[in-house]
View 1 (cartoon, rainbow, N blue to C red):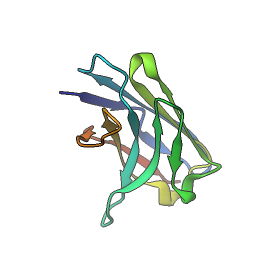
View 2 (cartoon, rainbow, N blue to C red):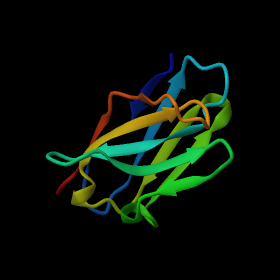
View 3 (cartoon, rainbow, N blue to C red):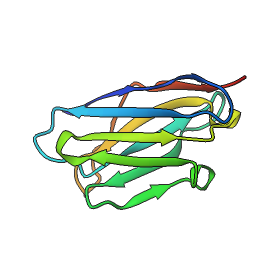
View 4 (spheres, rainbow, N blue to C red):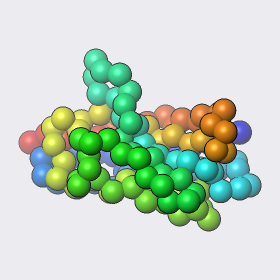
Length: 118
């Protein structure tokens, strides 16, 4: 059983930056894919960015050029550097982990709130 713990959310002004972290425990191997999804009030959860142990990255068009995902495979930790934040980035950000390339199991963190407001 994999547990995910997110940190780094908070309140930031438009144009500001935040860095989210997600540490996974309970896995003896590097987790195949880790990443971030977000859910704004009244909206469905959506992809932000994911990355695999091989370095493949998948990200939403809305965050390209502003958000950067990275990971430490040895620590099973994934990061999301968010720059040039906009009010529409306000959401609960959830960490996601998929242990193997089969993709049969998904783990989710409890989420961390990011609020972009002046």
